[in-house]
Length: 149
Image 1 (spheres, rainbow, N blue to C red):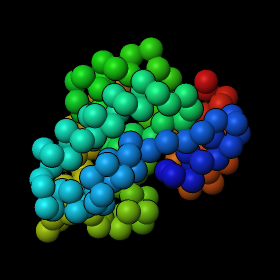
Image 2: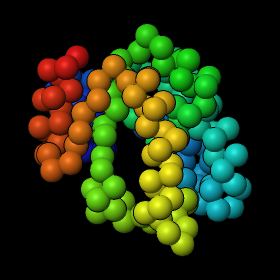
Image 3: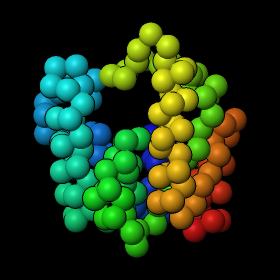
């Protein structure tokens, strides 16, 4: 997803910013470390602050973490913004992410499916554009985004 954001920023000649990177810089820890050491609620508070700050001061491509829009305040903040949901299948997610991260449990595939079952309706409601990314080069995804916007 970072490669897609970078390509989109390049094509639009806009800066790219990630709220996960903002959280990591502020906390001086990785997202995984925050989850493990301080818990998800602490991460979500930091994420919320990062989103509010970025929406207020960043004029470019903004990459949100996958759970950011699950906060109703963030969902409301995104109203009127151009939002793209990059839709990825479980098989692609397994290859890309390897199901290694702060939310990995004994059965990461089942957890991912449950998570997406909850998140997908919100992603689709918030998004102006939904682009399936499986099997596509970042440039192909960006072309679809630009055509849709």
